[in-house]
Image 1 (cartoon, one colour):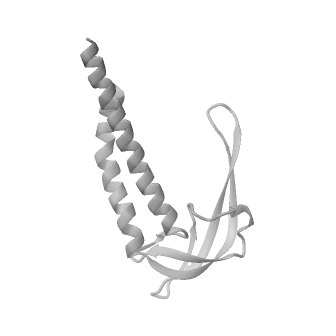
Image 2: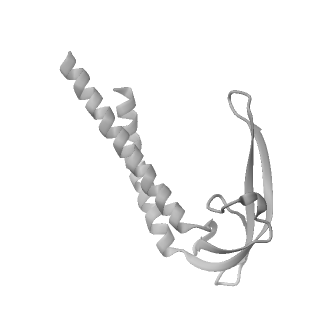
Image 3: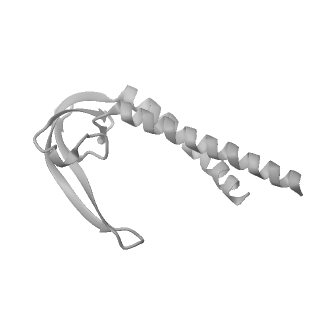
Length: 135
């Protein structure tokens, strides 16, 4: 029951985020860019295992002629060998720091996140009903 209530509370925010995620790529401007660096970040997880995260840094010029240097969060295949690669950068015109190089992957991730939360809510509701009937 607590799990279901938690998902129920989380779902409205998830729906708003999914709607923003689905609307954002349609409003994004596309310009050419280049990966100028790849940052390597190392850390440890809760079990003490080390991990490395590679974050590409892209440089591009907006349609308004503003030069931007930003970290590309996701969507770039093989980020370790990305330095010097030419990419198409899709950015939000009101905030060029909000960007992606793969809007299709961003759409898939937003849809998948919503579907997983909806399935978890349905499963939790079924389990609560089955538990109530068993009493």
